[in-house]
Image 1 (cartoon, rainbow, N blue to C red):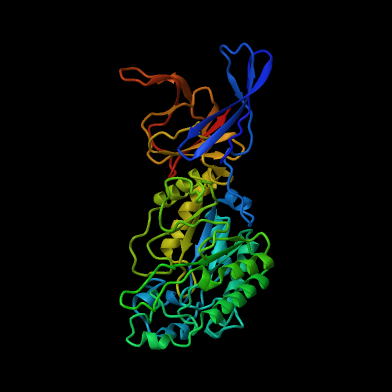
Image 2: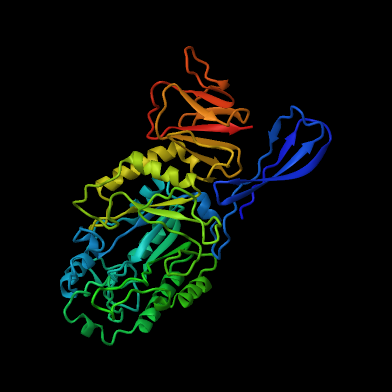
Length: 486
């Protein structure tokens, strides 16, 4: 159940308390506490501000900072940057180990500068970053003592996770580690329907002797290294479970889930080493973070009991996560900004991915996209940080998205479709003290009750607020109007 606390005072004589409730959007029960004075005819509510009306499910990790910061960078980097045709290239092309090993031998990111990555992330308005310490290929960017398949044994010759942590922390960003539960290189990881060797004629024979329990211990050993060797880690992003996956004609070949990962032990270990760390749900055990991928949710995510949860949409600039040289499906800056706004307008975070090149830098398309987002966030970030879904009393007009500051004092109208001359906000009359464009602080004049214009067909109603807009869209990707509420 979500409780909605909105204090009101009424301009009349002696007061008494009553409680009212209403239903909103099917899954919310809203409770309003109102001070009511006797002789109620003609009263006008005066709003007092409290924190956000939405109560989010409590989980073991510290999620408060996360829901405030709203915007982070995902970084997918590994050996797959060399073939540069998808991070799952080893799976897609069924690449044998001896062939894929050439990428290990030639991994030499001579232009890698973690400080430049961190500067670009900060300039884009991102507040935290999550790096793939190990992806499904099994290659580790850190100097693990439990494997030789790591960056320190390549021409790179150093711990790349260390450089990432130091650089991003120096820029004031919080630190997240992605760790793949899957490992296509480890000799104890059983061949399954996702494994590159799944179609080999002797796959079943190759699988003999592989020990999932030994592999689960390997994961715990590496997670211990990651959570004890790099200071405070804010997010642990496991990926992923697929217990129901099967392979036609091969009944011995099955997917993997929480029991295979020994997820309870893994999570308990992580929490013992880093109290307060946020952990996602992809081990198959519900934790702190729900993570829709490559999809734009249309409502605030809930758990099975209908409680609002902490959630983060993970999205890419294009279609793949790792560097893909020839991919041409890159999203426009406008679309990326709209994705960020829409996510926050539904109470979520956006984790936006970059796939660095094999030489270790962000390619020009990623750099240009980050710069464009940064230009917008420089002037409009106030509508993102510390904001959430607008109070239920406010409904966005067509072509717009709303966010609201957590203290309830400011409402932000994001203009996805720039209207001609007027923006009509039904239900807003009597609630707005002042309005301005956020990017430059210029006043936006408004009237109430009707559109002040000549001619026929003009809208009018008692609860209507009408903003008067310039004919030409301001020079920002997504203009934002900041409404100061009474």
